[in-house]
Length: 432
Image 1 (cartoon, rainbow, N blue to C red):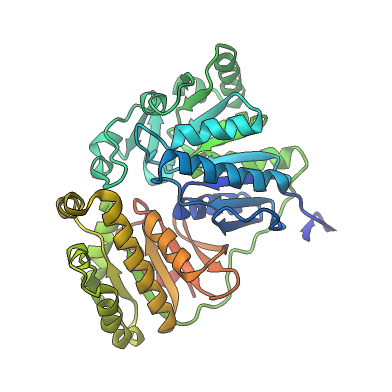
Image 2: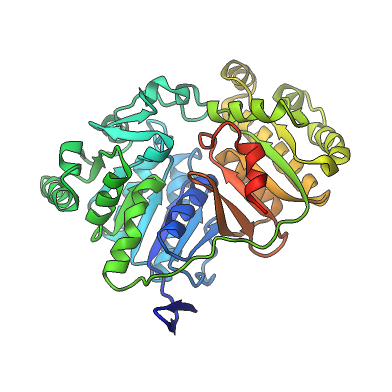
C-alpha cells in the first residue's frame, strides 16, 4: 500500500522495465526513484507465476548484453511476458549509455522482439546521459567532448564500439528502417518531437534515434513518448516518464525514502570492468588501501586464485575496505583473450570474482562495491540475491542498494564507465 494525497490505495504497476545488465538496471532504478516512482529491481526474469512486487515501477535486470542474440531475445521476451501479466502500462528497454552492442545485436534484435510481442510498430532509441558525459548529436554518440569511437570503448573486450553513428549501428542490427530526430527539433520541445516521431512512423520508420545534449532534452523526449508502448534507451531518457504518469493521474506525489537501514559488516570492493573509469578508480584506491590483483593468466594456469585472494583479504578486513580486482589494461586483456577466447576468458574471471565475493560475505563483509556489469551479474548470481531496494546515490547513476531477503547486504553495483576517480573510497562515506 502507498500513501498518496493522504489516502491509502493499492498501487498498480505503471512501468515495466527490462535492462540488459545489472548495473544498468540499478542506474535506471535510481532515475525512477528520483522521479517519485516506488521502484523494485529483480534479478533475472522471474518464473511464471511469481507475483509482481507492489510498486510503481519494476525493473528486471538480465545479463543479456553480451550473450548470443537469440538468448537475449528469449530472456527479454520472458521478462516482458511477466511484466505484462503484472499489468505494466508501458515498457522500457534499458541498455548502456555507450550503446554497447555488436553488429549482430543485441539492442536491435531485442527491441524488434519486444515491439512484436507488444503489437507495436515504432519506438525511439536514446542512450544519452549528459550528466555522465554521454550525448547524442546528429545521431552520433559522444563521450565527453569526443566521439564514442575515439573513447576507451573502442577497446572494450566484449563490445568494442568503433562507430559513433547510432543510425548506422542500429541499422546493422535490425532489418527495420531506422530514422533520426535531430536536435533542431528536440530543442523545440515535446510537441515538436512528437510530430517528428509521427512523421517518421507514417513514412515506415520503426526505430527513431533521438538527439539529446542536456537533461531538458531528455525530459522533453520522455514527455513525447507518453503514448508509445515501448521506449528504449539509457536511463537518462526515463527521466521524463514519471511526469507522464503523474499528469495522467496514475502517479501521485510520493516522498521516497532513499535511506537504507544502518550498514554493518566489513567493506570491500570487487572490480572486473576494464573501462578507463574503473582503471582510474582502482589506481586511486590502491594508492591508499590494500589491493589484490586477480591474474587471469594465473587462473588459466589453474592456480586457486580465489582461495589466494580470500586468504589475503581475511586478516585485512578489520582494518577497512579492501580492493580485489581483475581489471587490466587493453593489451593484457587481448593477450589472455587470444589465448583462451574472449567468451571463455570473461566467464573464467567472472566465476572467480563471484567465488571471491561469496567468500568475502562469508567472512563478514556487509558492504560491497562491485564494478562492471558482467562482474555484478556474476556476484549477485553467486550470492543468490534476487531483488534490491534502492538507496542513496553515490555518483550519478550509481546508488547504494540493499538486498531483499538473505543474505542481507548493502551493495553498490557500478557500471564500469561510471563514477568519479575517488568513487571506491568515497562510496563507503555515503553509506552511514
